[in-house]
Length: 249
Image 1 (cartoon, helix red, strand yellow):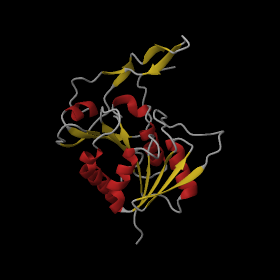
Image 2 (cartoon, rainbow, N blue to C red; image 1 turned 90 degrees about the horizontal axis):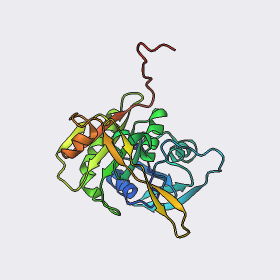
Image 3 (tube, helix red, strand yellow; image 1 turned 135 degrees about the vertical axis):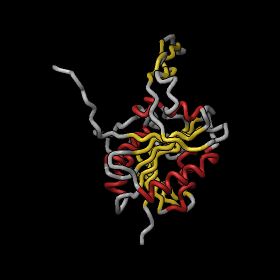
Image 4 (cartoon, rainbow, N blue to C red; image 1 turned 45 degrees about the vertical axis):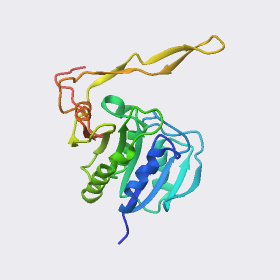
């Protein structure tokens, strides 16, 4: 019987520590192939490349696992892996480990979750992993290992409902007290751009911002559970339509 085929990607690029840690953590669970962007594509959401030809580069192996990069987006990585690189459909798609949170409405902007959603749309059980760390460079990914193994193993064994993928946010720097099934916190970003002046005297702008929590009293949100030390597992569905009750055009 063939081992499960595990496709791993991210939005931080093929050189990122998080993707190497994720591959290491699940290496004993099946045949792992890593296909990631050749550089960071954070904030890329579900963008894909239309007019620029994509290239595939073999990047050697890591702990015996095949590593490849493309000049595309995280979604491109999933698509080109399934259509060109792999000889069969993956049994699971894992995206991450993202350095930084993807809570609340950040899921709509996240390249990490864009890749997981693409896997979901292809009918593949898919998980996006993010490490809620405020360190500028490295994070204690190892503290999350047992939980990544536990969640990945369960999804490999049991699958996920149709049209559902998982957005998993893991707190670091504090004791982890368990795993909670959560809701995405309602909110929006404010104070989104910082204005600076470059050496030529020109005004330039950098994306920044603060997240305005519109669910501060809801204990079931991802933000609330992370604050309580829990790993937040949020089911995401890209396929369900909303309703407009009593709305007439």
